[in-house]
Amino acid sequence: MSQFEILVPDISAIQASRPSQLTRALWSLSGGETQVGNTRGHILLICMISALAREQIGPFYVNCGVKGVPTHSWDLVFTSPEGRVIAVSANVTLKERWKNENLAAWALKKVLPQSSAYIVLHNEDEATSIGNKIVRGEAASIDGRAQIFSPDFDQFLAILKSEHLVARDDLVDRGDNQAGLGPVVF
Amino acid sequence: MAAEVLYQVHPDFEEVFASPSILIDALWRRGELLLGPNNNLRGEFFELLVALALYKWDVRPFYYQAKLALIPETDYDFALWTQHGPVVLSVKTSLRERVKQAALEAVALRMVHRRAECYVLTLNHDEATNAQRKVERGDLPALSAVITASTADFDVLIQRLASSNPTAAPTVALIAHSRSVVT
Image (cartoon, rainbow over all chains, first blue to last red; front, side, top):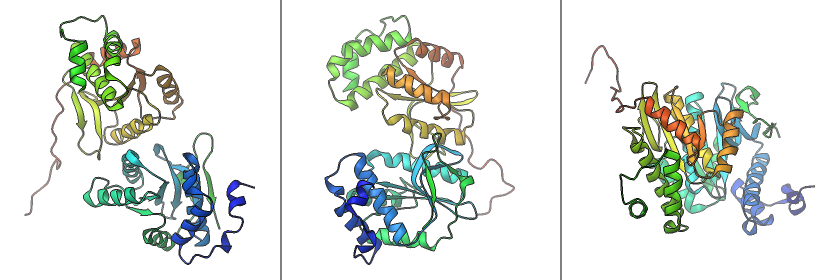
């Protein structure tokens, strides 16, 4: 049993009417605020995956790249029957790495033109800042961003839910050591 | 300022160094104490040393902090234009996760210029060796090489770049041809 399962034994018991409420509750229960480094990032991703599970959104891939876009992997990759990819990076904080995300999104769209890329963040100030960069065109390849406890996140999940998603192993790159997971289906 | 440190450690521009790597190694050693722990200053100083090496070994013209057309939001530390297209140098005192940024910038460049060459220059030999292994394994496919600037590998690169006869980058019309223009 993972530490997360010990801390949160029954996700369905959490009272939350919206995905953003669920992620906030899970973050708090799992002590996300008091953790450091990579652990916070892992908790954030688990919070997001839990919200996807509750909303029955999937299938998706975890920690995977996209074939034809070398070097970069996304936290979550959704694929459509037409060969579109929706790539999501979930980060506690990004700092200057938003530039990497923007470049990777640009490369993704060069390879699969109808694809999109989103950023989910914990840091509210950064979420606002990246939102402004998207509007100003500095991060023009990013399609949207959401702070994981905000209504933006609910809207983002609504977008995902409206998509026709299927598993497309042929589009996904699990990395040389096959570390990527999926397709995850609920 | 990095330029002031460079002037202090290299007041005589005519001072001769046996090779580019010896220039980098010697001036970095002289400057290191003056630079202190400020990473931005150290990075800027290293960039100036690379610029100096390019200049002294006739790898010119080169573009410093260059933004290339059609590639979004990316400043390449150094760019050259050769008959095969652009060559970019990403200059980082140490690599850590930043090699990934350089690799992504290389991916973007090669999507526009298929024959572009993309080099990462660093001072940390262990990190460079590890990253170069990844390049050779194909894990960082868009990068041409990761090179320690204080080693003979840098001399080989500089020699190759000088012999590639860099020129000023051409300007291209964004619309190559059209039958007519309707306004």
